[in-house]
Image (cartoon, rainbow, N blue to C red; front, side):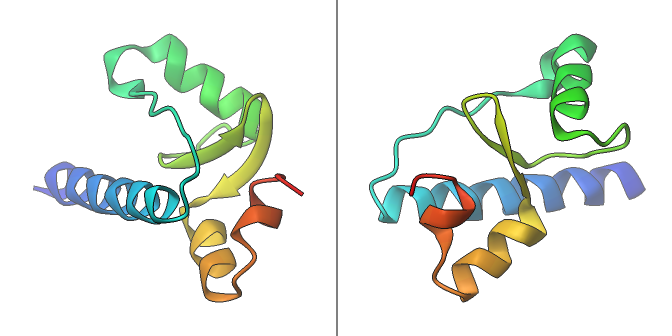
Length: 86
């Protein structure tokens, strides 16, 4: 049950990030790391956190942050800065 709750949390956070990016007309690519350990390891390496869990947000290869950091940027109306677009 714990993993199921975690999975739902990840999916809801992912849906929230996607909704906000779409509302701002920001193009993004969703990478599903559940398909293989190599993608998960790459995400963790690029984020600099060996225990990072999705969603993690990148602008190309540049790490922007995790869901909590994204959420804070939304509240502060600094999403473009968070995404390193400016």
